[in-house]
Image 1 (cartoon, rainbow, N blue to C red):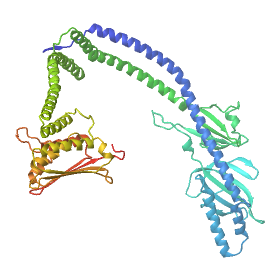
Image 2: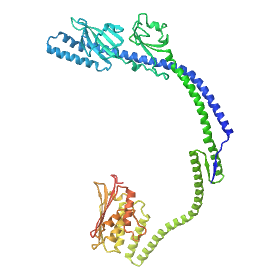
Image 3: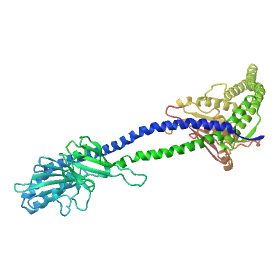
Image 4: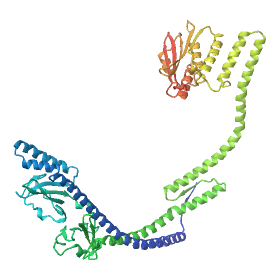
Length: 584
């Protein structure tokens, strides 16, 4: 074969690359301009939507916790379950009862707060003693209920904004509820409930890629009158009288620029307002980052695109062109094999496969010519195959009528049985073999063999529907033939029994003789159905091998063939053939 090295024309390459780059660069520039204009608006709206969404989550969770604390306070009032126990505790003088009531109050305070995992602390505060009567957890030293920022007051209930927890060993930010209550005729006090609200869990902060610092977010809260009563950063936004919601949004809107910050507000249905503020530099930071990164990506994309076009031209266009020429040559009838080195493994394999296809096509053409020559010979052999059995059966029929005309009934019966067996074995009779047809052919075969050998055959067949079910052709004849040839013995008796075992759902076929039996080596040899020595003149056991092979083909591994034999005591062959409940 002639080896060729592929070379590529520079002019075609330059034109292809120039046209490709011109189209792609134009598309990239147009897409970049359109996407930049769109992304400015999208990114701005994205930041605002995130801020508003986060603020709404904080406000909704505050409303939910205020409602939950209000419901708990109802149970702690004088008419509630806990309030009734508290009155009993304050009025009972019996020490034993006091102990049990105190224990029950402590248990019920935990039970009341259990449904809401955010409830952090519950207490009854006595104005007279300036101490807590009951508390679910220990309070910090120096706590003061008057220092919490009040957002709304409805009747005797005060809803308070963010402040540090009064619970000992905790520094979480909480919101709380205070409710005035009269515990007994002489004692007035306060119900205090606080709930945790994880601000960082709702205010999503994003990373700055340059300095890896978090975007600064500041939370403010305004009460129902618009006064700012809480600030998460009092150094930048201190809480003072003249600092109101109107100072941030003088036009009454809920978003806008306040100094160096962009702010959004969300007013609760209860009347208070939450505000979220971020620096303007952070607000626009991602737009600047997007522009810088987009420019870098655009430049890198152009360089990579040029490299990609160049590589594609070198490794794909050239080999495909050569491959097209080879196809044209094949179409013209040329089967010349040529080895191309394209420098790419896949293309080299493709050329090799193409050469292989040429060889196969050439071989197929030769095979077709040979097949045409052999077709006539095959037809002749087929006719001979059909004519020879037909001729043999016609000849046997002629012998049958000749014996009958010369008053030879034994010969006539012999020929009749032989003809019937031959037609059955060649498939000239029933196409589907059943147990009944096998038994009938077996009877004919035994009658035929009795004319040659002196023996008795006992056939015990249990009548039943199973006899009409399909099975293997020539199943019993080879087994009985072996029994007649090797197992007659001195008694000259062969016992055949066929019946249906309903419990195990098997057709059982047993063939037993009383002859000389088999040695252990011979028995092991018969267990291997495909061990057949073509050089052997006798090949004893071929019938058993045939039966075993046909059973494996027809029944798979569901049929069982068992051979029991002992030297000098005969051989017994048992077949277990499965049937389903419908008999198939």
